[in-house]
Amino acid sequence: MAALKTILGDSLLTKSGVQPTDKVLAGKSAIGMHFSAHWCPPCRGFTPKLAEMYNDTFKGKGFEIILVSSDKDQASFDSYYEEMPWLALPFDQRDLKATLSKTYKVQGIPSFVILNTDGTVITTNGRDAVMKDPKGEKYPWTPPTAAEKGKILLDNLGADLVAKAQGKPIGLYFSAHWCPPCRGFTPQLATWYKEGLKDNMEIIFI
Image (cartoon, rainbow, N blue to C red; front, side, top):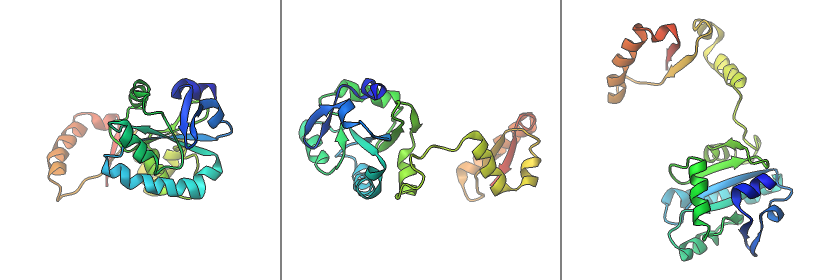
């Protein structure tokens, strides 16, 4: 828990006021940081769905969520946080908020970053993870290992096709004839492939 206190600061906002970080996160099994804001339409679409999943399933699994707000003033933050059943980084912690956004490379919101209780990152793509698994059957949504990804590739492409790569890395090229950017990029990719790329990797057109 000491690692999370270092990351999130000494205290967090709860529905009953500010409390020590180590106290409110005690006994939790994973942490979700909800980078969001009241003014952001996609955030306002995602937050109610996340709240429903949290109340129905995630909270019972020991999963805690923390709002990291990009709201522009305290009043907007307060109004938005009223809609949420979890914790929040206090709005006045602007420097810490900026540090968290930089640390986890948050480029846009909503963004949902999931951490282990030792502070290590499980996934920075938590929004997709929870939306695809609202019942938390794959909680805490640890991404597949390289070996597991290889098995997925083998299962879906077939052993014969994968074998043709002869152990080289495989690039999956998703493209279409009707797509103008694809038709611009494909000739260039073909040139690179013929000029030596094929010696270092194999490409499969999908």
